[in-house]
Image (cartoon, rainbow, N blue to C red; front, side, top):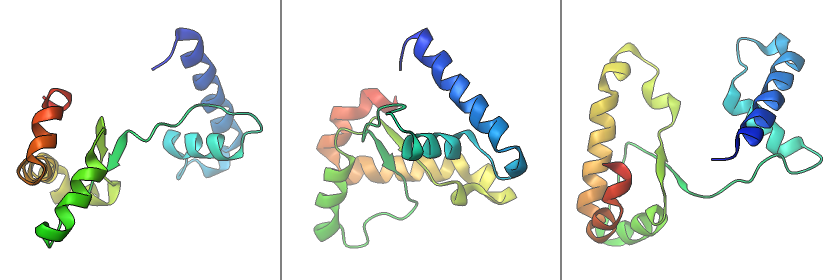
Length: 123
């Protein structure tokens, strides 16, 4: 989120970073640029909030021991980021919805209280 002025400021920073890193064209991405801007700027470029959960395909293997920690880690998250490595092959592209649905179904079953509390976020 942010004002129009803030969006323009960040877009300008990304464009400058892209221009400065033209040699990295094949591997450059806006995500990597944001990481670089955040980690190497003299002043704070943007605020980072811990509201995104790093998604995994695997779920707790020992639910009795691991599910409480897993559900606690999911608490107060507003989004799930699934690593790109899950979606690199042709098969994975068509499997994306199934992978994400399986994750959400498992989360819903494992973290019953959390799932009902946060259902508005995921629809």
